Length: 144
Image (cartoon, rainbow, N blue to C red):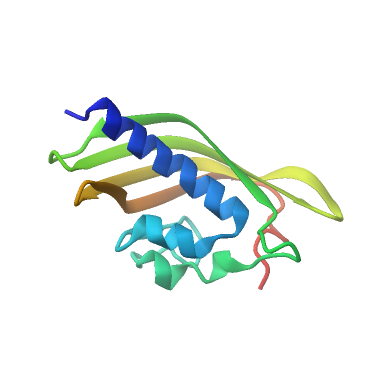
């Protein structure tokens, strides 16, 4: 059974991911995943690929060094995984974007389905599956 400290560590990973993406710190996002995989719906990373290999498209940033996005993650359900050092989570996510010529608006909404593994006492993403259910204007979401 997951202890309170483990639940908090997993919650913090979910929140830290959103914070780092919004800050444009993709090297630190890669550190959260280590050898984890990121599976996006319709994204360049849709195949089972280590984060460091698939995050190139997500690294498109604007003049301030960020993707000009805000990812709000909510309604997370965290559960024990198959082993004592494994956990899963399901969360809702809404991504908003604002540009100088574009007011803040939702560009995508969906669910994260995550698997986590604890190695050496440290929790990391083992897998993140993104199930995008709603799309807004994504024409300027990721720059080429």
